[in-house]
Image 1 (tube, helix red, strand yellow):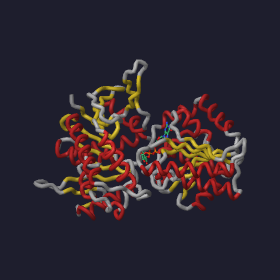
Image 2 (tube, helix red, strand yellow; image 1 turned 180 degrees about the vertical axis):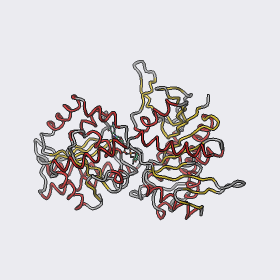
Image 3 (cartoon, protein in one colour; image 1 turned 30 degrees about the horizontal axis):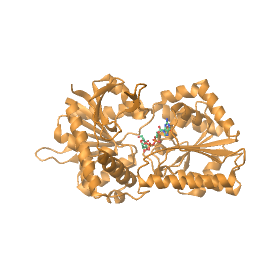
Image 4 (cartoon, helix red, strand yellow; image 1 turned 180 degrees about the horizontal axis):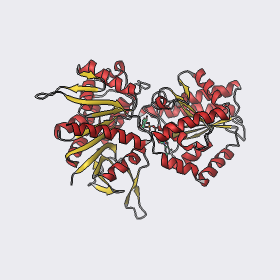
Length: 469
Ligand code: GDG
């Protein structure tokens, strides 16, 4: 049975866990995308095409949590070349302003094309006549064009969760024209920031010489008038409900107090929460904090830093090196500054349940988001959402998508270590009244522009295209 609305993403919205008798149980993955799309999927006849997260796993379509799931199989070699290789070691560093050097390998590109074709075929098979397909993210940039070739009747949206780089960086990609054409198979291409959309249309003009008027690209067709593609910013957000609910729960609040206690009741708790990724500026933040301790501006009694660095992409070399660098830095700073009772940095290379994350947000007087480049950064929005007490200070890198919206944060350039140190001191010493004034403004923005508003605005734009065709 074909579906009216099909989501295509690298991962299915479920994780496989073993049941008590060794059987497979599919648990919904906690991501924001699932939360955003769930109401949409349940409102219409929907299906989700994606990889189950394990190599060589052949699975028939199945239903979990009332969503029809269509698994795409990847071989171990494809996981290495399409996913860890081209997606996470070519596109990811290139699109994040070459913070790490992108690796270009022709075999990876071939695997990327092959796998994108497989996703496109699965979507083409799943979608009903004149249906809608929403493709997600940088692993699947060729799917819109491939899908259009197979199913010209369907309306196709694409949302890009990470930055799109400026042309002089993008131009390094040996397959730059193919990727632009791949994306232009969509009717609507959504980016996080206006700047990303502008970089994309600039690349289209420079490379493909297509006409661009305002936010519309005219894609020439063989025997027909040009096809219009809308390119626009749709800043993603969070599902605020679970954060508001958890933050109001007495046991979660008690846990926040317990966290402070267990650190020896420092005057201030600084917090960083990131996947362990070189784009997140974890080293810069730790360096700035370490220098403040070394200079005597802060002591470990004044301010403890908790750094959650959840394990990520552990088979990609750049991530292995990053982990070593950060762990060396943390142990040096702790060795120089710890007392028997107090630690400078509580470093946690672990993932935690959401309850614990919210307790950490509630315990944190200062939230440090110092990404060197980040599509949006949901951690910033999650922190703000939990602070119904209007306390706490968000220090936010100007290189995140969130910085466009969260104007009342303390803004930083994380490359400027002196500026970062000043911002940390401003945050640590900020009077209650100013914390409250800023936090109210931040919360208003996040609560009014939640993930439902995001998916609605994208799908409304897609529906407008579809009704005009
Ligand atoms: C990409 C783009 C864009 C992290 N550790 C734990 C945990 N997390 C959760 C956070 C947050 C999510 O993971 C991370 O989202 P971010 O937006 O911060 O960053 P990316 O993973 O890089 O996401 C980004 C996003 O896509 C959406 O479009 O904003 O720019 O790079 O929700 O809370 N959650 C739990 N335990 C952990 O240990 N439960």
